[in-house]
Structure formats: structure tokens, C-alpha cells
Image (spheres, rainbow, N blue to C red):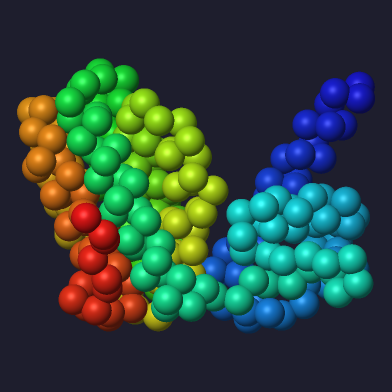
Length: 229
């Protein structure tokens, strides 16, 4: 009996987390807005426990902040400088990872990346979270599969801890997205890995990150700094 109750509570917390995440990404809850647990509890007609659990998980993902006296609030959208630094870090880290995976060509990683690309091809992108969440998740899964196979757990976890896809998603509502170039760029990365071309894999990965940066908010790749060599 107790096990069944725990499963039910966790499932409810999952639903609440997804709802609150969508509202944050869509700007229903503005950056730095307080998230009142009692008010949300009354609105959703549920107890405060799953709401608190959902907010705690969103805090771990970087979308929500918490403090002993102020409670929970929406995290401010990172600055352009933060995103520029993130771009440089990802280029350095993930280009290296792409080279390693192209060198070893692990079948499991290639299979996972292929499956993620197929999901991406069936997805959509748009200005609201519900329009891009599945495609954004497929994009993240593609990169995760490559990171998992690169042979450096510390590097892989360092990239994941920044939750780059989730933070970039906060920029999606500013301009509608076109999924076609994302698919093309992923396919170029995968093709280079399948053929074992390390240079092409690293170049395709960097091009994808830079072009994604350009699409997020109309910022040109020329504006973004080049990684140190």
C-alpha cells in the first residue's frame, strides 16, 4: 500500500513540474517572479507537497531559485555574456567529445543518436513550450548520447550540469524556430561519426552550436567569441 502511494505522489509531482516548467519557459511566470506554493496549491487544487517537490527539482535544473526567507522564485534569464561563455565551453567540450566518438564509433551511441534524430525529424519547433518540448528533448538526447560515449564522465557531467538545452529554451519564445536546419546539422554530425571522420565530426558539431546560437535570438555567430586554441 505504501509503495502505491509513493508512486502516485511522484507521478503528481512530475505533472506539476512539467506544468510549472512550461509556464516559466512561456513567460507566464516572469523572471524573478515569486512562486507562492499556497497560491499554486489553491489553483491546482492539490496539496503543497508535490508542488514543493516540483519546485525543488526545477531549482536543481536552474529554472527556479530558493532561499530560506524569500521562498521560491523564477531564475532570471541568463545574460548574453553567460550564453557566450556557455557557447565557448560547449564548443571546446563537445567538439572534443565528437572527435572521440568518431574515433571509436560505438554502436550503442550511434544507435541512440540515430533514434534521437528520427524523433527530431518527427517533432516541431515554435514559440511556445508545447510546440518545441519534444524536439528540444530529442536535441538534448542526441548530445547526451555523444557525451555518454566520449569516455570522459567528468566532461560529460560538466556539460549536463549547466542544463544548456533548458536555458536556451527560454529564448525560443522570442522568435519562432525552424527545425529543418537543426535536423541537417545533427545529420552532418552523425554522418561524420559513422564514417569515423574526426575532423568533420568536430567541425559539424561546432557549426551546429554556432548556428543554434544565431537562431536563438538573432545573434550572429560572428558576435560570439572563438574558443581559445
